[in-house]
Length: 211
Ligand code: Z5A
Image (tube, rainbow, N blue to C red):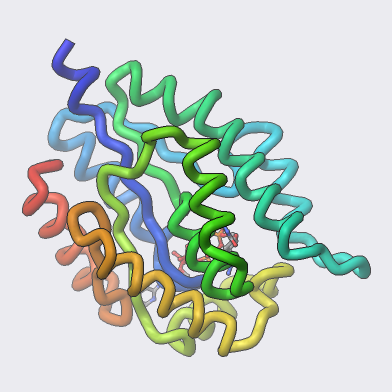
């Protein structure tokens, strides 16, 4: 019974190129080495419907998507993801490690698009009920650093083609969230080497007695 109570929901956040994908497997390995069963998933995505919505959200199109449609599609994908993947895994005692979640909505649609944050809070309550990540790790680095790393890897998608001031607002929104919720959101300096970033992540997991 106790394992059902202790399964934790951990999310990774940050602007593009800061190393979320690079650090996902590292965290999974730490969790598994400490005896936890863990699933790894992502947003938008994580279910067949969510992945279809992800493709629509990220693909370039001649028709400009409205900011409200973008927000609602993020939460439509999230509703499906919580119902079909996240909550069942937590109920079965599995840790859930998710590449982005609602903090990304506050950062991108709230900070970047400058949508009314109360709309996001209303959707968060409706779609998630009381579900919040137990720990959110924000990988923080200057926009230029993240963009340079991401640029070496692939061509920009619909959201990545926004200008630097958009991503400055996204980064600042993430940093504000960490200030507002220090109990469940931490930042690590992602401008350092991968080894140094991983050492900070490990320390955070140890400090919070997750591993
Ligand atoms: N979005 C949204 O708007 N609202 C929402 O609610 C949600 C999402 C959930 C998809 O996200 C988009 O959806 C995203 C936000 C939006 N758009 N943007 N921008 P995504 O997570 O799939 O896409 P992404 O953020 O663009 O991920 P990314 O570019 O793949 O970045 P990453 O995973 O953080 O980085 P990485 O792939 O691990 O690393 C990038 C490169 O840097 C790679 O070559 C690494 O080897 C290298 N790297 C990583 N760490 C280091 C260090 N420490 N030193 C040197 N080099 C490094």
